[in-house]
Length: 296
Image 1 (tube, one colour):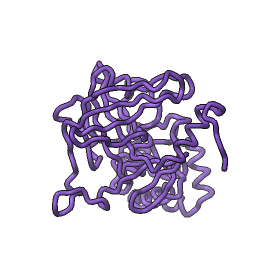
Image 2 (image 1 turned 120 degrees about the vertical axis):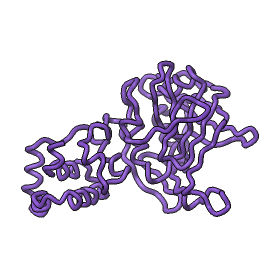
Image 3 (image 1 turned 90 degrees about the vertical axis):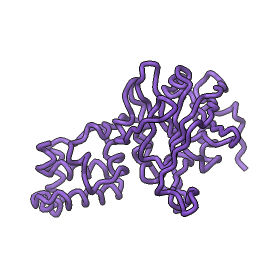
Image 4 (image 1 turned 135 degrees about the horizontal axis):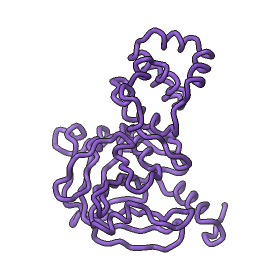
């Protein structure tokens, strides 16, 4: 038995053990606005529901390990007392992950992730239209658990309006646990899909992905590429240059032929295969070899 004294290891190491041991954890995809009305969207996996009468959720914003600073979500809730907690399913997991990039203050993660804002009814923060369940909440209490890196800030909030997508309901109006297709957080890069099992999503914390908003229009609006595909593409820090694209096609004659054929739909399907093989940079090389992409 490996025994650990929490006081004898770093906060980062201890976090790794706790996050790997306590799971799967549901994800609170929190949308907030600051005092100026600027929108923020970020996921938190220290999250659960703790009461139904009144309906109360709690999630924790952990202070940054590097300097102990607090995150924009917490600042916004302290300023406005409002938050929308959106539930994450598999179809938006890559876009959710992209939104966790530490963009500068005031950057709208809805725009960066390519997710859609929809107005709330009782609170100012918008909802994530693609989320299967969206809960408008009023903050009840914030409990600071420490002031150093890794310390949590427990946010208790009451659900004042609940929205559920029709396509996840069964014939009796209840949430179908298969249709909702939830994902949950585990340790490291690992997640679990409730009805299928574990999968890996590389963390976007060491770089700032360019975001969906920086993509050429015919990629962003592709009829082939899914939201998860766009999330992977948006997590790439910068686009490959012409020389890289040419070298890639030179080494992959079949892809050069595909590019020269001018069939955008086939090219997008092949790029999608590269994304499923976890090769987003190569997928960009192929996508940018399409003349219709280069002209938009």
